[in-house]
Amino acid sequence: MSVTVRVPAKVNVQLAVGAARPDGFHDLANVFLAVGLYDDVTATPADELTLTCEGPGADQVPLDRTNLAARAAIALGERYGIEPSVHLHIAKDIPVAGGMAGGSADAAGALVACDALWGTGASRDELLDICAELGSDVPFSLVGGAALGTGRGEKLELLDVGGDFWWVFAAAEGGLSTPAVYGEFDRLTENTAVPVPEASPALLDALRTGDASALAATVTNDLQAAALSLFPSLKATLDAGTAAGALAALVSGSGPTTAFLAADPESAHRIAEALTASGTCRSVRVAPSPAPGATVLRGQPL
Ligand SMILES: C[C@@](CO)(OP(=O)(O)O)[C@H](O)COP(=O)(O)OP(=O)(O)OC[C@H]1O[C@@H](n2ccc(N)nc2=O)[C@H](O)[C@@H]1O
Ligand SMILES: Nc1ncnc2c1ncn2[C@@H]1O[C@H](COP(=O)(O)OP(=O)(O)O)[C@@H](O)[C@H]1O
Image (cartoon, rainbow, N blue to C red; front, side, top):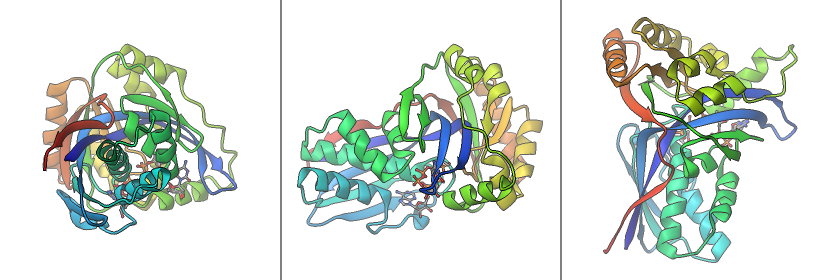
């Protein structure tokens, strides 16, 4: 058998960042929304752990044991005393190093795929524990939909979403390192009192009612100033999307992908065309939300 698992990208509709903790992480109120851009991870029994990757940006994805998908297979194997003799193939469609949690998605995908392949019988909570060890965003990639992440983003409370939201994503030329963006946030807030991060009740309400205008009025990203400071040309992309009629324009997580909330699918396609014509970004995609979490697509006989 080989098992293929589909995993979604995310956008952070609220990313409230607290002061740096003694362990170097930041406490967050991180409102994740899974969006319909996906990587597919296929696990196939093999003599040893090997990886391949295809798709946009595949050349920037490490194929050794530092790959988050490989680390997920190793962590699951260690927990259940199973040698991780598996080939992992990643069909990538989530921008690499773009602030859309592509690596985290691949980790969640590999975990679910290997779990199905090896029949460990792990509970969802056990899988979520392993996800949290692998990275702050990985638990959300497993559950999908919408969730509030607290702590460093790994403690999840699932959220209701009352309708579809349409997004346009503009991938930038190049990537941003997540630790570098948090470091720049620390530098920019050095002499200010950083408030304790809290989820916005108005934003949670906008998600619950499925009201795109209300959501647009409440989206915030505390890492945006840091991402713009490290990647100033993103401002031109944000301006181009706003001029094209986006209800909201923001940096996705740590960036440099920019996200534009549209009123409806037609408007999303108009904004996408205008962004492409603006020449301010590398590529543009339209995607709906919410999207499901890690989903087994098929188990194929070899
Ligand atoms: C910013 C966010 C928003 O969802 O994602 P991206 O936009 O990069 O995808 C996340 O907080 C990224 O989560 P993730 O990429 O899983 O981070 P981790 O692997 O856990 O940590 C990588 C590094 O980011 C910083 N980090 C991460 C999470 C957090 N709450 N505080 C931090 O300071 C630390 O420097 C840490 O060493
Ligand atoms: N499976 C993976 N897919 C993408 N990047 C990965 C993966 N495993 C490790 N990485 C590394 O993690 C970095 C961050 O990638 P990614 O998760 O796509 O971005 P972000 O953290 O901005 O959402 C990449 O530059 C890459 O070196």
